[in-house]
Image (tube, rainbow, N blue to C red):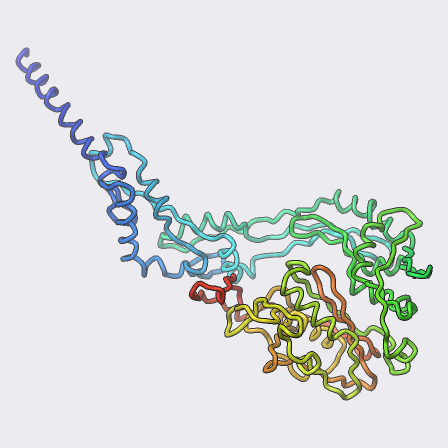
Length: 498
């Protein structure tokens, strides 16, 4: 018995340094030996060498990693392209994860598999999932206040169903490299605006806004009145995507509501954009309420009576589009420049109005600046960029006036700031927008602008009530990913569905 114990003790004594040496061998590098990622051996290396090995191995799997990823959204099947949503293996983060040391005893035996760290662009993923989600997503009702005459009525928010960008990203990141379709969760979209907020807006702003008229002071001691009816027609109280209700007076609707009062101001042209802005501040205040108008003196070749005799009696239509960047941006500057050029143009019965023909060249000499323009399906710098927004606004104004469309050219791809289908591009001198006054009376083109919008109104004799109904979108095409050489002619932009 004594001899057996000694023998055992000898064996144990010899085994201890053997285990220590094996552990040192297994754990002596940044990434323990036997570590693999997606079948690629990266063990036994320092971090830079492991990253290089992983990168080389992923090149060999490029075809697999580029395959379309099958997804289901509420039972609706679809696919996403990894490149379109920046779906990729983060090599450095994966190596860092793999460098976390396992239990020393576990490192002695077998191999160790580490799942890769995967990244995706949530915003691009949301756009790519729009098609399979189209039949599942149910938009909620945005909160706000509407007016029944001059009586404010609450519009309470209602929940909808949709996708949560972060949860969608988590599902795709976790399921990308598996063999089955990735299930994208459909979530309830809770209203961002509470009932109490809407009620507070009604009591604190909407009711006072239409409780009394606002007196507008003009130079020389004259005034004009903004009645409650005009306030109710032009006041916008609708929650944004964050649930905030910010009062706004729609300048185009205000101009239409005050057409009689504005016509009586003679040669003084009231800046209705400034008036709309100033009204927002005084509407919640008690009566009497006054603002001072911003005016500019004009020297019209015809007065109100002359226009009435010509058949220009009323506002027939008005359309507004919005832009970003403020009036200081080159694009906004170009929009305002062409709007001021066209403002007041009269189109006689049977006459065809050509925007290119009316403005002539739109270059540096004419006061236009460089801004992005669309050429061959991509955005590049070009003088006069942004004119297509004015063109689209004018096109819609003539469309809703019921005037004959002679020629317009849609953009090469869809811009969300324009109404789908009813939009037009322009490029001097090859692409033009033209409409024909097919009515029996002249029409007047009236333009105005704010710091973030352009409005075109058509004045004449109203003939039609024009409205538009859009069907659900179909045959949707996903954008291609195109790479251009870096430089001033490359303006990066997100793709959008077509």
